[in-house]
Amino acid sequence: MTMRIKILLLLCILTVLFTVWIHLSGVYESRELDKFLTTFRVEKEIGFTKSIESYGNSLSTYAFDYTYWDEMLNFVTTRNKKWAYENIETTLGTFNAHYVWIYQTDFSLVYSVNTPEFPKLKDLPFTKDELQKIVHEKKFNHFFIRVDSQICEICSAPIQPSEDTERLSEPKGCFFTG
Image (tube, rainbow, N blue to C red):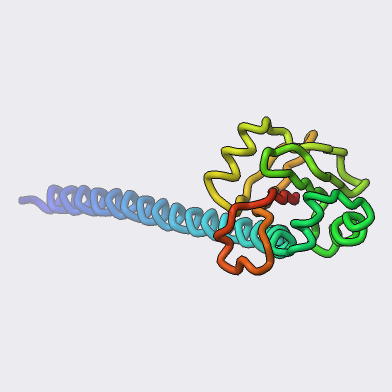
């Protein structure tokens, strides 16, 4: 082989190696970028979920604590507006709540209140059958509804006597907060 052919062969080999190296580094960079973007997306989703949970925890606490109370059970029967003002309406801000709806077991509305800065929503936007389905699938619920152009987080719990620590008795009503 002449020197010219050897140099040409060497240049071809170097060109092939360089092309393979460029391709492999592009694939590696693409995979690293995909890993970075996936990690970023997952972290962002976790952060969003945690912030929703931390804000919503006060709503679920409100629903849980206020429904495990004999006075709430009495309120479903008496509908004492003064008691409702003192024990429900004044506590909305404490639990970051803007709405409360209390229903009897037949899902007729007993009481509703909302803070003035949010759109008035006297009743939940569900039929009695839909409410019954929501409550009977799970005792404690957490979901979202649309109120005008906003999203409203809702937590609900059954109203039961204080002595029922296991929450096994038949509910006497249902408490929704948002």
